[in-house]
Image (tube, rainbow, N blue to C red; front, side, top):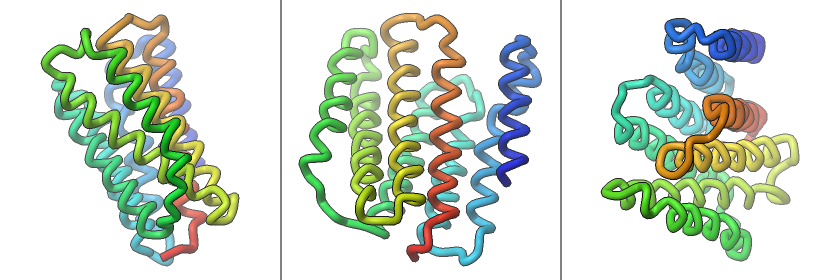
Length: 204
């Protein structure tokens, strides 16, 4: 899984750098699809791994450029809800204080984007809340699970928040320079780290 994922990611970024749009379009959903298959096939097929694989699958669906923002947003929203269910299934330690910075980021980003989001503000706000919860629950694993599992999941979730925040700013507020790179690099790192954490996790 890892060599294939790395090779496809490299090919995708080369296509993006050379502005080979048909190749970039064709490859965009492939890396996360490979991760989904790899996590699903990892033995034993625990509930946690199956859920993470399903979350990755919805991420791959979101990667397809249907041309409809709401479709992409919905696919990733479902993905994050599944990730939350997977994480809560292996650890429910509250760590409520840890939720504060994550929720602050979600609320702050929503307020920042309010004017530009217009009639899409409510789905954007819901999405920001859900991904903030996902980041909090992943971060709460640190100290509860072994570091080789907890840190990839927590850092992966943080990268996901960064990527989505940049995507939202680019869409609703300011055109960012090199936006594709700013969004896709942390996004693919996020999905790769989440998959790595799932493969390493021995929890049911």
